[in-house]
Structure formats: structure tokens, C-alpha cells
Amino acid sequence: MVATDVAARGLDISNVDLVIQIEPPKDTETYIHRSGRTARAGKHGTCITFYTKKTYELIQKIEDMAGIKLKRVGVPMAEDVIKASSKEILNNLKDVNEEVLHLFSDTAKTLIEQTNGDAEKALQIALAYCSGHYKHKLVAKSLLNGQENITTVKIVNSRGRLPQNSVYSILRKYWDPRLCDGVKNMKGLRDGSGVVFDIRAEHLDGFLENFNRLVETGERIDFVASKC
Image (spheres, rainbow, N blue to C red):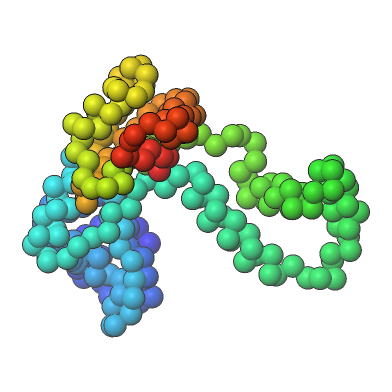
């Protein structure tokens, strides 16, 4: 069902368990009416609201005015989509009648032979084909804004707080200047223990290898670097 705010106020439609708002409204009352289309009469439901940097203030206003706390969910990664579709495949496989399985016996044996007897790999190939995600290699995306060919990493202090300006100093001291110049979207963690930021996907292996070298050489460091 696709609707304007008219349906949010004037219509009582049963069995609505999900409401998706393509942008947050400018007033809290409208948000309450929209989200109230689900979970009616004591039932449970979900309301998803898309927002951008420009409309984020509206989200904060809704939280303050309504006295609620909304859960922030990042941009879904390709891996998340594939795993979700895999679960759907499992549900559909329950409908397969065992009496037809013998028709695929020869094909199954051939597929296992093609993978040098690795039955698990053969099954993975079959599931990948069923999911529709099998032709192209997955493209890395930022967890912060969804930009392609970008990877989100984090640096945290294993002993206490780690402000952003200290992280820039750490990067300049231990990493290649070219990587430091390419750092984007650095944001502090809520507990103050470190930061997350974006780097080009092609620099990820070098970023992690450099940190592992620091650990192996016994360099006295009080931070941990990893991929998010």
C-alpha cells in the first residue's frame, strides 16, 4: 500500500505490520500518525524512516518532542542482502518434494566432481546461483554513507579514551601519508574509546598489514585497528 498523509490520519487498515517513511515529516504529530498505522490494537509493528544529513535534525526533533529513541541502522551492505536472500532460499527449500530429488542425483554428483569432491563448495555454488548473486564480485561499500569502493575501519584505545585529533596523529606517525590524506568521514565512537572512518577499499590490506607489523615488531602501542 502506497499512501499520502491522508491514510495516516483517516483510515483504519488492519494487519499493517510495517510502515516505511521515505523522509521524516517536519512535525512530530505527523510522524506519530504515520507510524501509528502499524502496531494497532496492542499488536507489534515496525516503522522505518529514511533520512539524510539534511533531514537528520528532523529525526532529532521527533525524538525530543515525542520522548522516544529511534534506532539508527546503517546502509545495508551487499553481504547483508545476500544473507537475507539465503534465508529465504532455505524457507523455499522446505517445499521441495523428496520424490523429485532422484532427478538431480547425476547433476549433484557431477557438480561435486567439478569441485574436486568438495561437497560444501558445490552446495555453496548452487545456493549462490539460486540467490541470483553469482556473476560479479561484491563491491566494498562504506558503512557510513554507502559509497562504493570504500571500506570503513576503526581505531580504538584498548585502555581508555581516544579523541579524533589523537587518531590523526597516530595515522601520520605509523601509516603512509597517502593513506592519511585519503581518510574521510571520521566520526568518534559514542563511548569516546576511538573512531571509525573511511579509506579506499584498495588500501585496506595495506592498512591492516601495517598494523599487524606494528604488533609483531613489539611496538608499544595502546590502540587496535581493524575493519568494521
